[in-house]
Length: 368
View 1 (cartoon, rainbow, N blue to C red):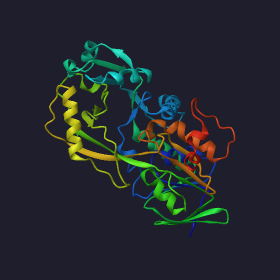
View 2: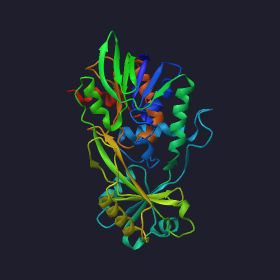
View 3: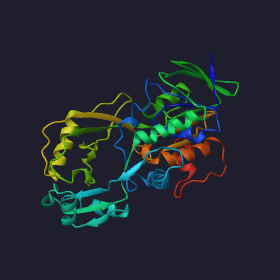
View 4: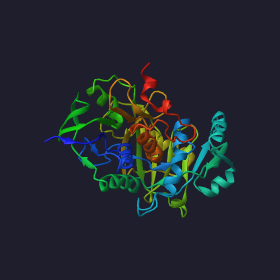
């Protein structure tokens, strides 16, 4: 039996789930997830941060627009806070001078090295030329946010189908007929929220790729340093972007900030790259990492210009892109999903966040 819907969303990560929640009560929606559980790839491997000072202009605009939702979610959306204070301490070493002004323009404030040392007692201030701080950076409860979106979709009668990799697609009678590993699905609109697999999915629909590039990000959990105020540390971030670290679940999470281009796959951490990131962390912090408790890798998928893709493809009726969040998918999900929902439903004058234009998000910008 063929399942039918108004909208079939291919990809059950934060992008697909948040859009499904925004469409709740406005369109009958089915989420098709190729894995056997939700949030298996990038969503479940996120560093869980709200960082308004990071990313290209469109990302920063969508992040700022998502802030009110994350700080004060709608009544009944979830039972626990979605964000908590964290802050980020940017550390500059000799040779990083050109990077400081760029950071200031993004909202970082100068901090004395003495104040930075009080904030993070393990800081090797003798190795630094400057420290900057952004208090607007927050921890995000990714699991709570993600599951609240899924719950909102489910309460409105939406379905989520797992182990449902799309195998073939054909346009018939004004709808897409999808053959999936979990059965057939028919919907007038298909949303490509397939993350690292978005270009590969488009090929099944006879569409050329947009040039989306998955890039690996590795991370490790190590024992916490034996200092009293460790849980209150901000995220520590190298201005040259060769590592960042922060408290996570009572442990220290370290990432080498790698961005190695990869083909879509079930990513894992690169041990050599992790070792380089840990060494960079030890260069700035007076800590010694003797063992890694666990490690993981994830794929962050980038559009050629760094901005997300949201909109109908001009080459195929009823094919809507929602991809290329570049690792910022969690923190921009509230705003991007609202934008995507209005564009998908055909609002000719969508209420877009300041600094965001529909044409700057649409896939037509890559179609020549």
